[in-house]
Length: 83
View 1 (cartoon, rainbow, N blue to C red):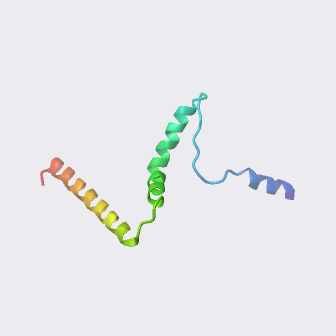
View 2 (view 1 turned 60 degrees about the horizontal axis):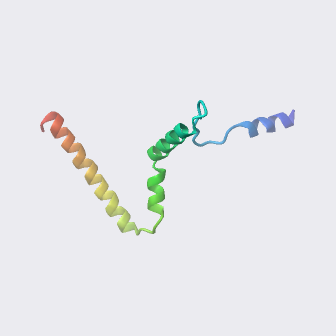
View 3 (view 1 turned 135 degrees about the vertical axis):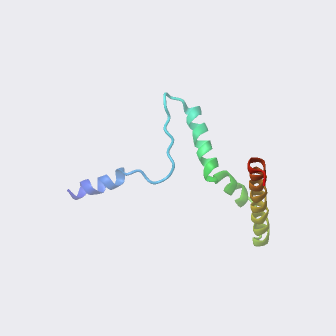
């Protein structure tokens, strides 16, 4: 009985991302996987970690990104609502 309990624990899949391959369509599954990784931000993080960046540079980039998001939001609001 003790052995069965350990076996059940081992059968549980570890956390993470899964992609189902349907009808032997590996290319389609790869496309889905890439889309999931892009949405999760893995490629962006890899790009950021490839070279060292100081804290000040990171802050400046984050502030510039926030400014771009805000301007984009205001532009969309102006187009939709007119103010």
